[in-house]
Length: 330
Image (cartoon, rainbow, N blue to C red; front, side, top):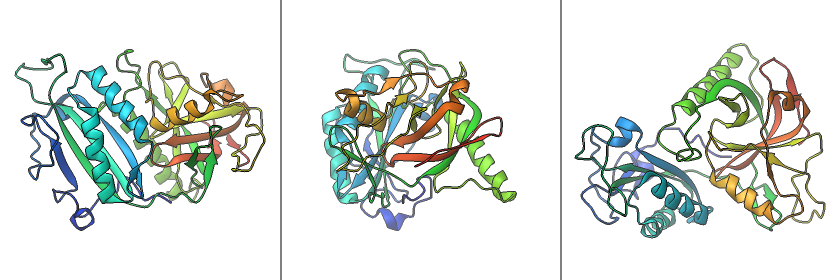
């Protein structure tokens, strides 16, 4: 099981960090290189706070190693290029790996924001390498369940969490320009509102003794075209009218066809989504990007959510906006 990622952290559980609130400043606007700093002053002029000018990534750590570190490295590079930020991704990854070794087991959350600018308002100036930026890191001790695994076609495995019930939400994700689509930017108000709706549903069902079953409830969210895109904190894969398998290491049967919604205008290109798609790319059944529409929902045979910390989370039941519930065999 995984502890709540949003739970508050005490100073005692982060004695390996430099600041009592669990955050450490790896790079400030006055520093040209990555260095841990005991000074973690956060200005109200910070562009991440003012404009959402930056990005974040969340990394699972097991036995002192960052899970899927190559994919997180790719995210650092792609986001720095897209947002025109000056980041030495190799040096930053080395620093993150050092913190992972000290943490041993848990989660690292990295936030990168553009440094304060002399240009007033939204504008910024950048060299050929991009704008200077501020980098902050938080480490949280927790145990990531790894007792169950899903074995991918390339032989790699990902943690598989207990099955959950999920619900379709009315919230919708904003459509973004091609430059911003798929980025894990600090502009996440649509996800905030979707998560708020999910929490309200959970609270209402708990009050009426009709709580969602499952350890990790998740909500399915649409984009502005009305297609279903992802969860409130995860990407999503699905099958239509066929029996799925989560094969064991000794299972020789080929998996059925999986689909995942395209993320050309909204959603986040998640690390685990990329891991899974790459693993299936050379198999007999590569994953196909295909929109998931309202008319598809009654024909779903399987669905699972995924992210880089939890791995995959199968769905045992999905409640539709009509009130109908679709149950799946896991």
